[in-house]
Length: 147
Image (cartoon, rainbow, N blue to C red; front, side):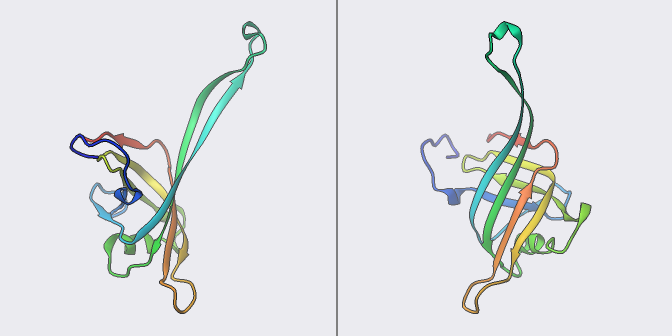
């Protein structure tokens, strides 16, 4: 959808990158991602003042996002290796800057995101080893529209 294109697009046009050194601005693509889902957790405050005659008022006061990715373990791919290397980390060591690039070029950056590896290298003898992980926002995300 870059260059003024419009319309529908296949999901494979989305791409994911992880910071080369965790907190830097240089990113590596993550090879062999096959499927993803995105969930938003929205904090909404509610109140019912007298003047609304019983109708509830609302204001969104909090947000977080989780990106769940399913793929294959690709040893030797820098981005894939970086994610897999977080499997046994805890605390701040399990954080990294993460970027989601949309088909139109929009970039969503999650600074110091918590990377939770949920599947790594397991399966039946004839399976291809998985790499599955959740990326959880850790503070406000940065959305840079396509230029």
